[in-house]
Length: 425
Image (cartoon, rainbow, N blue to C red):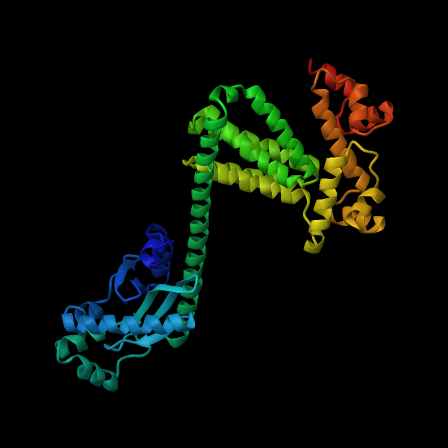
């Protein structure tokens, strides 16, 4: 955000919706003011009371109101909490500061009440400070209609308003972060498309068959919890979709929803909690329904797939993250070898028992379970190639015994390798 001010920071419609409701619920007058104390908006359609309107009807008196506001909001900003003050006309008002990244933007002003019924001392002070500009009798008449709020009620209202304003600030920070993400994604999309134009022809991406092959590889990475490769593949898939659909929103939305749905199932197969995965997918489907911009589609689907991947390997102890990640990558790169727990542990310079414990505690599976999962995923890829026989695939992924390979493949996929291969051709 280049211009740090309250006008560009707060969403006027949402401000009115939330603080307008607060005003209606409490019956209190609320204003949004900038750093100079100038009123930007009166919220909740509750105008200033007759007393304040009369005080502000005189230009010099109104300047005093502005000076009171400015002094109060500066004090509120120093302490970052509600600040109570008495304006030059005797009204009790409180200011709640709006602070973003340690920058003071303005305040929400609330109150315009009295804490007690006006007595002789109050009227004497009122006359003393305003008789030069305003008719005292009119002031005394209007002050009788002012609302009375006890100190407890006023403090409770100020505390509640502080919570509401903090919610508004956090919401706008989130909105700004999303807008930054959308901007970065927009630049990335532009760069990807320009690179494709330099190195490829559009005809290369018209065939959905090629897209579906990439999609299967992508889902395989998800099942294995290979976040880096999954994210790189996702980037390529989304650029393919944008090229194929020419940015047409309806078709793009269908494909993105389809990709998210397939990803949720792959995540469950990889070990993510099914109930949580389906709940995340449901929220995603609702969230994406009214999206208009292409970059929003891409940011949202990237976010939800990252969540699925986190669900597969939800590491409880962050200090083990590097070890588990390195072990997983070592298996993915060496699955075709006669890989053992000891060989992997030696590569990581840790004991086999420690590595075994990490797999069980952090990944909720054994070393051999994960190795087998990787081998079966690679077998599925190879069986789709006509030039590979079942025996060749078995050997290529590290199985010495073809019968054992068939047994393991059937356990994971549901059919034998031969039946699976024959169903493809």
